[in-house]
Length: 239
Image (cartoon, rainbow, N blue to C red):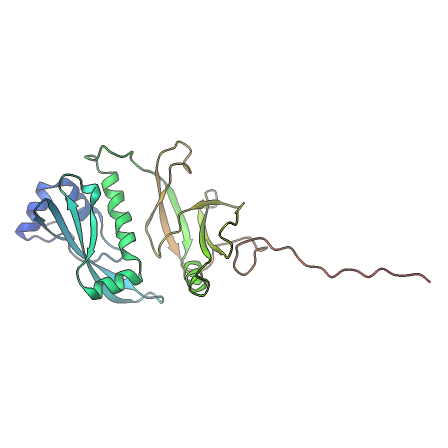
């Protein structure tokens, strides 16, 4: 039995027969996926089972969302994530879990040596992201549904600033705009046009508490620079 993988006969058969399924089960663990993987074959598909330990805003585990990964044997990249119960779907949708799992699995499949259809993603380096900024932005978004959330990468500083704007067409001159991450997302895919060599990339994210150092001249929503207002001086009249 391999750590994090059930030793039952069906799972062991999938683990030895399908390398792409073995890669997922062996490499995706922790950060919420804290249970053993189970697997079986179902017709033309390989199905993997696990559960995600959900965390609330104060960092406490409070619910579990069970899910299945359905991978076609002929093309695993066409996989689907399915929730295994209505309760799992409720909590999964609340935390945008499906998108997070899709990113994790797509990354493992894209770097799997048996997948010749994609370029291997280049890992740039680790960047820090503020949990407090993410939580503040989520609350702001709930009150401003038409606003946008923006992630700005500062490569030299080694951080990603999370900001927001009420103007969807606002242009940011500081940092490089990258996809906005989910809370405590571990890896962030970077589009090819951002990478200098035109190949896809991936960033490792380190989530920290507190607010990253941002320019002090930004307004409360940190979406644009604000000019300091000064009172007009009165001209002195000499009589």
